[in-house]
Length: 167
Image (cartoon, rainbow, N blue to C red):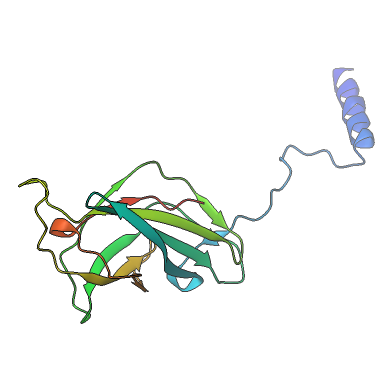
């Protein structure tokens, strides 16, 4: 009798749902692929400074024609006017989260540098000027070469503080 009751209940559920009884959750939209270097352009969005510090906004644009996502921090290397690699020490900080980019959408990250040494107070730094920045998107090995606006940057000791990519 119990088995018959169970079959009747199962038949009622199937009838009520149009035969679509299932234990699986509904399908979600397909997840986007990770952004690769070839999917992105990166440019200097400009910045400003005061009291020997400079903050710059680097803009990332998805040019792939499809949605993609990224998360974390870019790899950075300072490049001189002649194309030589300069001493670069990157310190990352802040929370990271997944950033989804539709085709044509933009994201950004900030970099901050000090152009004056801590000791003696206010002494100019003797760092070489970087005119370009080699930027490697998170989880990638290829890079984009970004021309820095204006006079370039002169980070003391090659140190750059970097924030995570965000919208």
